[in-house]
Length: 139
Image (cartoon, rainbow, N blue to C red):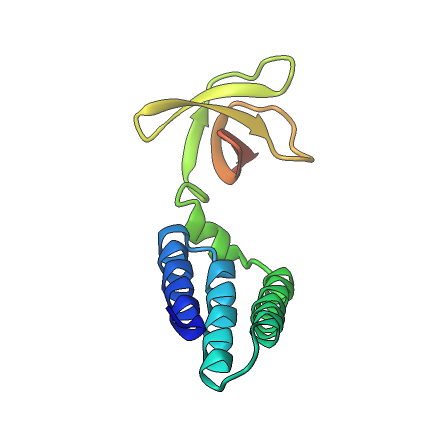
């Protein structure tokens, strides 16, 4: 089997794994493998192919990581990820640690006060979700 064929098979495997995981980093490595396949088809030595694969795949992964770090999640992004944000719940009582149980969407949820809020009963808005706990603010 030729070097180019091996690189193309590796490209297909990496792209298939990326489709299964959705990370995009494997896609960058797949691009590196594709670049190495093109290098092999151009008649380059194996050492050159490896350098091309590492350079293209590594650079793509690094650039993708830097791009993701610069992305600032907006309030709308948070709302899209947690459809519970903004919903209203009723608080019957708070315990000494500032925690409570509220009924939301037909189930009991553990909830806590948002920073700067004081415990009060009545209607509260879901401000955030911290793990499996709702963060509430008084309405």
